[in-house]
Image (tube, rainbow, N blue to C red; front, side, top):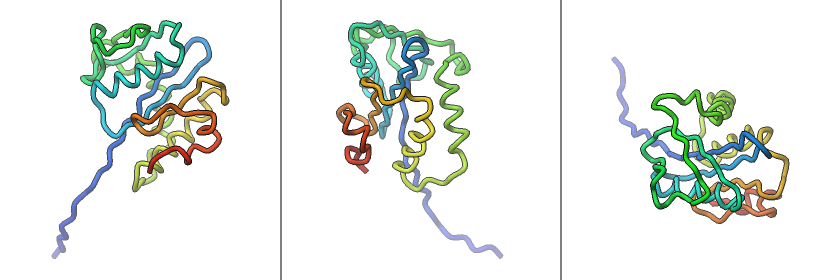
Length: 160
């Protein structure tokens, strides 16, 4: 006879928005958020647009429901969206980077989001440009962009 014990599985959800410049300086932009919707996606696009306001940024994106459409008024003026055909993540260059990170951190059990975020950042460090101005990793959804001080001590500016 088996003993059945009731339990409740609790999952924590976090979302990583990532963009990798594939031509030029290979800048890596990241945004960790506790939720995902079009307003948060618009925030991430503004983060990319603000990195270099004089440049045109072409964003290759799948057609997920939370991605903005090309005619959305929340899309920054210097952002152009290039939608991929449905069900074709293999055409998006940043997906390959995501696959490498997933392969490296797939087996450990993370009991909180913070250690998972730390593991993701540790895996992304070799891919990120080396401490150049303009490189930002924003860990807490809608927090202000990271500064040089953040890069020296990231834990001092990140909420738990």
